[in-house]
Amino acid sequence: MTTKQLHQEFLAGSGICTDTRNIVENCFFIALKGANFNGNTFADEAVKKGAYRVVIDDEAFKNEKTILVKDTLTALQELAAFHRKHLKLPILSLTGSNGKTTTKELINAVLSKKYKTIATQGNLNNHIGVPLTLLSMTSETEMGIVEMGANHLHEIENLCQIAQPDYGYITNFGKAHLEGFGSLEGVVKGKSELYTHLKDHDKTVFVNGAETKQLELTKTMNRVVFNETIIQLMDASNEVKVKFKNTEIQSKLVGLYNFNNIAAAIAIGDYFNVPEEQIKTAIEGYIPQNNRSQRLEKAGHKILLDAYNANPTSMMAALENFKQAEGNRKILILGDMFEMGSEAEKEHQHIVDFLEQNPFGKAYLVGSNFNKTKTKASHIKTFESFDDFKKQFKAKDFKNCFFLIKGSRGMALERVLNLL
Image (cartoon, rainbow, N blue to C red; front, side):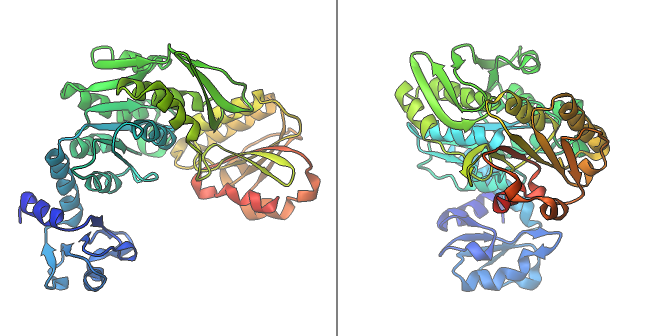
């Protein structure tokens, strides 16, 4: 079956599905495989639950509603690329080391004030998530917003081949996924694959004027440079407040590092002619969730919860922000930064060295990487695991404190909230 024929079958159904736990009536089910599962084995179950068609790549699981292809993942990606060309709608893609998901959510909040948008759900931004995002778009969609994640070279390049973006934005270049990229230079090269695609197809890129490296990389491209007209009005302990033209915008996002995320959403909204007041409404109405830059209060404590992810760049940004924030009795609970590869020891020690030289609060460092670091500072304590930390953490020892909680997703440091 050709991709065009497969697309006709897809359009006859009611949306895409890859998990039998989430099947809706008349959906188009694609049986993907992974290291620990084989979607082909769920073909009969998918039909029983109401799937219109089931795409498989193992003829042993054929039934009256299956479509046999050579490889289901390839079929998914080719179908998404075909669907994207079929719809002919403008696509904005974004990537970067930090702030991708928050920026994507802000951009969607702003653009949806004027357009019917579809954006990446959560952080489904990989070789499966990007195709699923594209296939969730319909003839009614007026603009697509596609987040692209990567932890090695050529990944963004491949995602661009599928999404064919018309516009692009890179949040920043930071020390993330060093295990896959090898170095910061590797990160720059990998993320810049978005720039390469946009330049090769004569498309447009949005560039933060404060990012010197990005200004250099995009100087021969069609670009929209922003930041000059957006002014920061805040201190480090409060929600970010900005002024755009004649409008002051009070967000619910905490942290100096979120200024660039907000500025990007404002600039992109302005470029696409979203009215100033609607931009203000969208930014002010966005509430951070999923452990990203959340400001909480519990048991008399103020808490900055940023436990969704961490890498050396985002960790240092959070620490610099917390250092400047107003408030006494500061407590830092930091978890290991993952996917650092051979740089893990150096990068974790760098964080410890910073905390030694800047004793603005007591620091509790959790995880095997932090536990290997060296320090003689009395205000820094390290723990091999969360369980070790939990055994020694006594809520009664803390009163009216200001907590920063940050670590990689695998550390699940939001569990600290239960200890309070």
